[in-house]
Each structure stands twice: as structure tokens, then as C-alpha cells.
Image 1: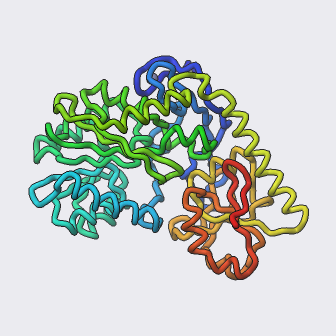
Image 2: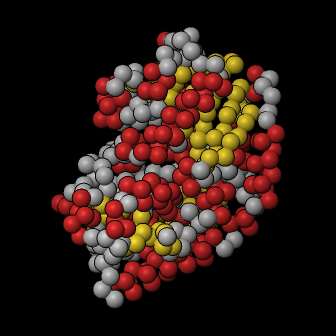
Image 3: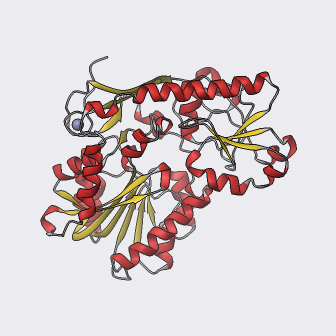
Length: 409
Ligand code: ZN
């Protein structure tokens, strides 16, 4: 393989953050008859010494990544309430009303924009997955089925108003052509408009060993330092940053046109300083990370093997992408984790990619009353423990495995 180059600045990538081996796509849930055709790809995260972006090698054909997208945002309660709060704050902060125009990129099933529609604000969703977009349209959220980039932005700017607010929350990590995407943001943004970008924060990924958030569909892992570099390349500047607890620690970055003359909040320099202190602008900031990842794998295997040996029944909860990175890196199969329960009917009856662990309806837990329930999406642990409060009456324990095995008391 030729040496990979940075998707943001083009520099050669020579520094490994962690090599997670060959893995299938983490969202490629399988029908039982598809197991024989499963493909795997190297999952290798690297650090760019020039612009500080962490990224995985570009090795998967795009049609594989975007072909079958089973994630519907509305299936997570905490996510829907996060969106509601975001909209409430945005309406006040940006004075949004009937004469404003808000565009959301990767608007999913419209769960966020629906709140703006309710508030009487004109909106447009951009969503490439037709099945997901159809749900949005049904609930009254105008949605274009397409990918976002400079072409889409130029087309929209010719047909309608420029956007006062562009919401690009939790999409930045999934953008294959980052520079085209950011150019598009600039082209669609009103001269005085604002872009809201939410991304999982690299600072938290490194600090808390959140290596299971690394998967092929997740191309890039941002510090504010790295985001500033790519935005600045296209005439955009960061005017404010907020820290969020979502996804194990995220940042919400507000950006505007460089030429807008907008004031920059002191919060921006504060976060940048914290990132520099953590070494996110230097390769040695990632020293020891791979060893901590390996220790997490050993901890999970020790726990599962000793549970099996002592006859304790362990099942999983939450068929999230991050669980697949963890299980496949650790080599866990149905012999160690019998099944994973998930509320999404789109996943039930299928198998987790790689590990081939069956996905079942959560009602199965009520019948089986397992000894331990391993919560794979640890970022939703409180929500899951609430949903499954009845399991405590059966004597079940709740467990998370990242960054290390922890029994939730
Ligand atoms: Zn770079």
C-alpha cells in the first residue's frame, strides 16, 4: 500500500495512534445468510503532524460505507432530548424566526429540525440516506436526499436564501472529502451566519481510551486545533467553543466567515491551550495510547473468560458501532457473549459484523434474566440502566468495558 496522506492538509501520515487490525464495517449488520460474504478492512488510526488531524486510513470503497445505513437517531432518548435543548438555545442565541433559514446537514430522520419547524423557522434538511429522509419528510421536515459538498451548496445558494445557521452536528467525522465539504459550508453561509459543528472531542478520546469510537465510517477525529486548521483554509474562523458530555465528551464549535469581523470568545483559546497541554499538537501526545488500548482488551477478555468458566451468563446491550470495534478487536464471539439486545427493529434478527453475535429484542432479557448485562454504548450507560431498571430486581449486574471493566453500582 502507498503511504497514506492527510485528508485535511495532504501531508504524508507517518505516525500511528493505534492499529486495530482488520475489521468489517462497524455498521454492516448481517443477515444470517450474509456471513460468508463478509469483508474486512484495515482499521488504522494515524496522526497528522502538520494539521493535527487524527484519521483512519481511507481503504473502504464509499459505496460500502454509505450503502446500508441502519441508524435512526430517534431510537435514542437522550439524543432526542439533546437535540431539543440545542434547538431551544439556538433559537434564543441567533434570534431565529420566520424570516430565518436553517440548514442541517445529515439531518437523519428530522428529529432535530422538527423542533425548529414547530417554532415556525424555515428549514431544510440534507440527508443522503433515502429511507431515513423519507421518515423526516413524513413528519413535516423538508429534506433533500443528497450528499453535501460544494456542488450541493452552490445549487442551494442559487435556488434559495443563504443560511443564517448551518447545523453540522455529528457529521464532520463522517465526511470523506473534508475540504470540499468545508468549501460548501462557506458557499451556503450568509455573510453574518453561523455554523454549528459538534464533534466527539479528541481530547476525551485520548484521555479516556475511547478507542472503540474508532471505526471505518468515522474518518476523522478532531481537536479544536485540527478543526481550526481546516476551517481557516476556507475562510472560516472559530468564534466560540462549548464542551458537551455527548459521545463521552464532545465539542460544539461555532464558526463564521473570517471576513464577518465577529468577535472570538476567550473559550476558544482556553480549549486550544488545554489541547496543547495534552500534546494534541505533537506525536508524543499519543505515546502509550496503544498500550492502554491493549490493556482494555485484556481486561475484557479476562472478565468474559472467567465469567464463562464460573458459569455466569453474560449478555450485551446496545448494538452500537462502537461495540463492534471493541468486540472485534478483542476477538469476542457468541461463545463469550451470547447475544446483544437492542431496541431497534432494524437490527433485531441480524448479526453483529465480525463477531456474528445475534441481535435480539430486549424482551429476551426478561425471559433469561442474565447474571451480567454488558452495556456496549458506554456513553448511554445512564439511559440504559434507567431503561432496564427492572434487571436489578432479578439480581443482574450492569457492566461497561471501556476504558476498563467497571460494575455499575
Ligand atoms: Zn494534515
